[in-house]
Picture 1 (cartoon, rainbow, N blue to C red):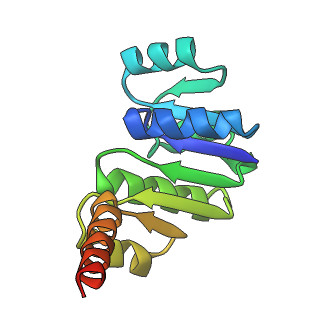
Picture 2: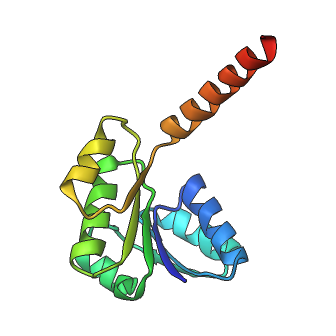
Amino acid sequence: MQIVIIGAGEVGHSLAEALLKNKHQVTIIEKEPARCNGIVKLLNTVVIHGDGTNISTLADAEVDKADILVALTGRDQDNLIACQLASKKFDVPRTIARVTRKQNKDLFEKLGGVSMTVSTTDIISTIVEEEVSMKDTKKK
């Protein structure tokens, strides 16, 4: 699969590494030049220095050929815009947006252009609740 990742922080870098190990084609878009240089040295993949909310940057990354776009920046509004552009302008079939503010999750889904949202807070909260529930069951 052809996957475009926007944001090469720890999450983006780790995801790219895992996807490359599974033989996917990965292109990364990153705003910070130093981070781009670091990723290029560590991973054998295309890294584009640019803004994932910019149409020309997305075109340079050949987003129109992507099967999935994953927006992992720390800014919810950038993740939403990147996914909407990928979906509506470049016809990317599946988009995934990281959501850092829980209240934005429903908004992303209502506005469209985002196939799926991922919230670290929700994931960790679910795991903690399951652990608490399991411990309560064991005590009975």
